[in-house]
Length: 226
Image (cartoon, rainbow, N blue to C red; front, top):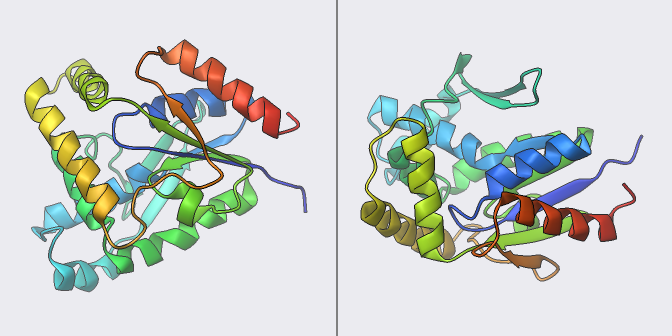
């Protein structure tokens, strides 16, 4: 079987993981896997059913009724399918983002999704981003990078992203929600957000996208024979 390579990118909300991972995947010819979108799909499904992300019994009762699919268009863009329906746009709200963080703390949800994520990595060269890729999902990833930035910078990035999509947003509220998300992600008992021991930390607070990309390619180039 041909050797495949895996690049794990972890970090808190708004650190720029998705933007950078997509660009890197396009340049390297890797498949980009946005694991956050997978958890958002679960959160959106439960939200439509009126099930609280904190409702353990409800989550366990309905999770088996959800079939998640991942498809890629001709440009390599990842599309999330919820029981056959493309919900890629619907899951990109701040509300679903917050609920995804809570949903991801349920052991039953992580168990269902873990094999899906690992299977993609077994079959493809991947760049996978999330909260626990280097620590739990792909602990043997060839390259591990932990992207971070100040909470102020991350809030402004998320604000700009939502405004660009035509959604209403308040910067102060977004910063408060990101701080709450950070707490949830780092304090959950199952697979909390933390930097893997063999991960390389990259603070993007003072870097633009091109600067981050340059640093990422330098790090990856030192690790992989690309």
